Amino acid sequence: SAVISQKPSRDICQRGTSLTIQCQVDSQVTMMFWYRQQPGQSLTLIATANQGSEATYESGFVIDKFPISRPNLTFSTLTVSNMSPEDSSIYLCSVDIEGVGTEAFFGQGTRLTVV
Amino acid sequence: DAKTTQPNSMESNEEEPVHLPCNHSTISGTDYIHWYRQLPSQGPEYVIHGLTSNVNNRMASLAIAEDRKSSTLILHRATLRDAAVYYCILRVANYGGSQGNLIFGKGTKLSVKP
Image (cartoon, rainbow over all chains, first blue to last red; front, side, top):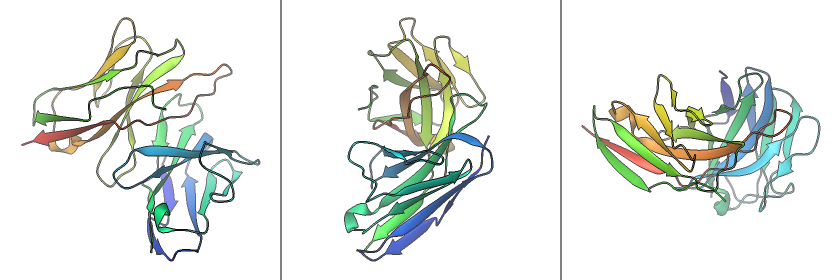
């Protein structure tokens, strides 16, 4: 299994500012993903965080708005840039663990409110 | 787009079995059937997955139709803690050992009555 630590767990931010969310895993992982969950909705995949190279973004998400870094196998950050109230959501980190197979693990999420 | 169809909601009584259905008529031969659940205010957690044969673990059982176009997650004795949104997701196994992304649909919201 894996323990995923996301920081911060929640934040209230002013519009126009940026917030960086951290995801730290206690195991080496093969894949890391970032999801967004808008209020009352299901999870939407933002991007795959690639170690040492640019993230792979899903349709509707762009690097300028959601820059992602992954400097090593166990750590990644997601920045929500130039925030507006529409960015108020829960942001979740997810990982696949090397050698475990097809099971995915999720962090507890970061609840972001933009005012 | 999600390739599975689930009922929006279901109700169960505590300590009774629950059968959560999922249709995936366009499933391909390399798609694994995954189930995750999301308890209130938590991230999703893995429940079970399978390819062709029925699967059992400590949390649940997964019954897969012979043609693989549908599956059923079985909770043998529902508890109040099982109240959650349950997601049925197809995940492709790629050549070379990598996996496709987990694409979430709307899931089934399970309510458990005492």
